[in-house]
Image (cartoon, rainbow, N blue to C red):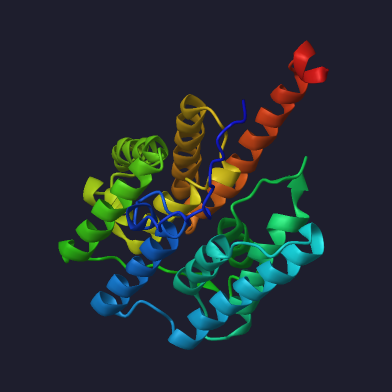
Length: 283
C-alpha cells in the first residue's frame, strides 16, 4: 500500500525572542552596566579625566582586540570584553597626557593573547594594564580616587544594579565574600593603626572599588572554577590588600589581585594536570 504523501511547507523562521534579548543573562548586560557607572559618576561628580581620553582608550581596546583576535584565532571577536577593558581604563586612569590611555588599553588587550598558560590568559586584562602602568609610571599616571561622599543615591543605584546582575550570573559569592572580608579587615586595620573605622571602610563606597568588585575580581576567564575556592581566593586578595594598605601602598586592591589571581589559576592548573584522566575520556 502506498503511503499518503505529506506536504512539507517551508520552515518558518523562529520568532525573535525579545524577552531573552533583554534578559539579565545577555552578554551585553555587563557593558551596559559599566556604562551606567560612567554616566552616573560623570553626572554626579564629573569624574572622567576627559571624554576624549576615555574615547581613545575604548577605541584602542576595540581595535587591538579585533586585530589580535584575527591574528591569533582567525575569527572576529565579540567586543563586549574589550569595551569593558577600554571604559575601565578611561575611568580608572588619571594622567594629563594621552599616551597612558593608549598604552594601558593596548597592554590590557595584549595580555589576553600573549600572557597565556595552556591556552588561557591568567590576568584580568584591565587589572594587568592598570597595575603595570601605575607601577612603572607613578610620576605620570595615577588612579581614580573620587568618593561618592555623602551622596548615597548614585552609590545605591550602582550597588543595587550590580548586585542583581552579578547574582543572576552566579558570581555574587565572589563579590559578597570580598565585601565581607574588606569590612572585617577594615576593623582590624583600624585597631592596628588607631584610625577611625569609618575611614577604613570609606574606600569601599567609591566608584573605583565598585568597578573592582563587580568586574575585575568576578571575571569568569580569570577566576578558579569552584565556588568555594573562588571565595577562598578573594578572601586572600582582601587579606593581601590589607597588608599592602598597612605598608601605605596606594593602589593596594589592584596589586593584590595582580599577585593572587594568577597564582590561584596556576595552582588550579597544576592540580588539574596531576589528576588521572578517566579511561573513557582518554579513549
